[in-house]
Image (cartoon, rainbow, N blue to C red; front, side, top):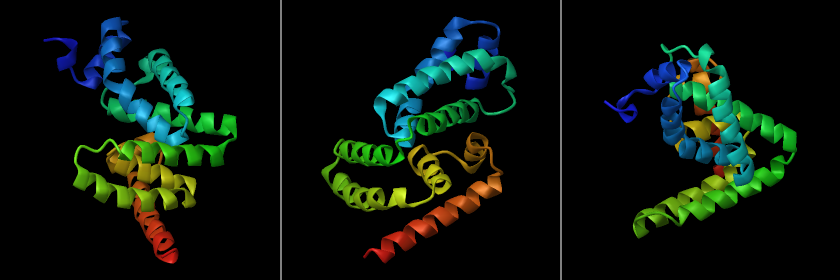
Length: 186
């Protein structure tokens, strides 16, 4: 059985034992996922690359503190999220980040496999991207994690350091507020 057959939590145990092949497997599994998540979060590809690299450094430095009874994916996403938020604060370019993120979503929309699906997605994405950044930051984070990253309430709870019930409440409020914004501008 190779490293690709091991669960993330088992790989974390191997990394704790200073196994660099296990670390390489984790990097291979998460590099693209974290990159796309951080780009959506901060809106800048160059900064996202730096944040992802720093995330893996933090994973290696702090692996001894990881509890193998918890989900590794939530732990690594929480690290990336925190570093991404720090990057936003550091750069103080929130409005530019929002515009770049919207451009990024528009560019990726054209990569859809099917013309019909692309048209349907295009209409929805156009509406969403015009409105999503009108929401407050915590609601935006919830929408990105839940819909774009397909994270569960439990994972969102771990990533954002909020109770699971709060994740559910914020998601409902975010959807309600987004709907109000969309109806208001029609």
